[in-house]
Amino acid sequence: MAEMTGDRDYLEVRDLVKWFGDDRAVDGISFTVPRGDFLTLLGPSGCGKTTTLMSIAGLHAIDSGRIRVGDVVYTSPAEGLFLPPEKRDIGMVFQSYAIWPHMTVAQNVAYPLEIRKLARPEIDDRVADVLELVGLTDMADKLATQLSGGQQQRASLARAIVARPRLLLFDEPLSNLDLKLREQMRVELKRIQNEVGITSIYVTHDQSEALVMSDEIIVMSKGHIEQSGNPVQIYSSPTNGYVSNFIGVANLLKATVIEAGDDGFGKVELSVDGRIVTLDCRLGRGMERGSKAILSVRPENVHAEREQPDGPSVAGEVMQTIFLGSYVDCRIRWGSFEWKVLAHPRARLRRGEKVFLRFDAEHMLAVRP
Image 1 (cartoon, rainbow, N blue to C red):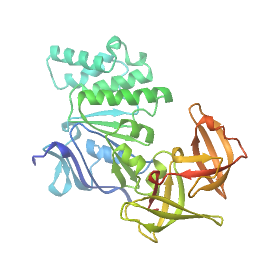
Image 2: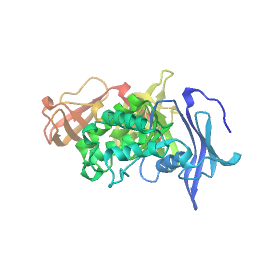
Image 3: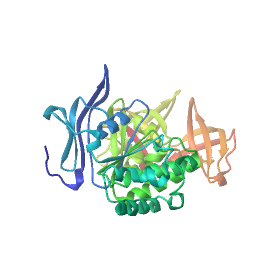
Image 4: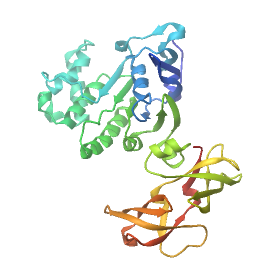
């Protein structure tokens, strides 16, 4: 079955459900991806992100729902449709590299073209082009076992894109690399994906990877989508405490909304060990007067000052300072709660010092628990 579609919903996943025995691993999720975009499925182990990826690849037969790419329906149990994985025209990059150790780099990359029976001159040209793109031209005649981990991952990527697939799927491809190489490869993968323009789905539990690489992020939990949006939206405007806590680092405090304006701002009341303070903040979706909420404040948006500022503030004691070069990671106790604060080294905050914490309303968000 085929139907015409536009570039805005090049990949469509609709009402996807997948069971493993009594476990509903994916629970009716839906999303679309524009042609050429880089989407990341982000969440902890067991949230359903890899199951979703494998369902798109055809490595899992779904129980209900529909998956379409362009004008081709890949799977739809209700319509009796299931396109085998080998006919889906998908490139995959795995955590384990999955390249053949007895072949050279060029032979590994050429393999997808050889099974498609392309002419040798075209194979050689395409392999040369893609090895240049991933920076492995000088390694073409090396055996895969002679490459470093990062080079093997580049070879795996080259093999995935050489056939110019309809989709490129990544299953935690950087988790085996050391930190420095992971950071380098994040930038390289995004650069290469931009250059080749292949619609890509990336699975990871690493929120830094998601923020650096993605056009859009879907945060998942227990088979559900908690929130989707671009990296700035996900980081700055989480819809609930789960997303706020999973993306980056945040101070999360129980609060009650005591005032809600029409401009998206309001006031919340915090109470910790009898200490009560009222703060201005942004209000998330569904927040109204009397709502129970979680107040989310990023450490970089908490200002520690020695003099009490005008307006509402929190008095605390510096419990810990860790110098990290361009900033100091501080813990400041307010009753039984410890605020995470990123201070400038010039502030010279010291352990045991009394300080006041000041906040900007636009950088605080009250969301549903």
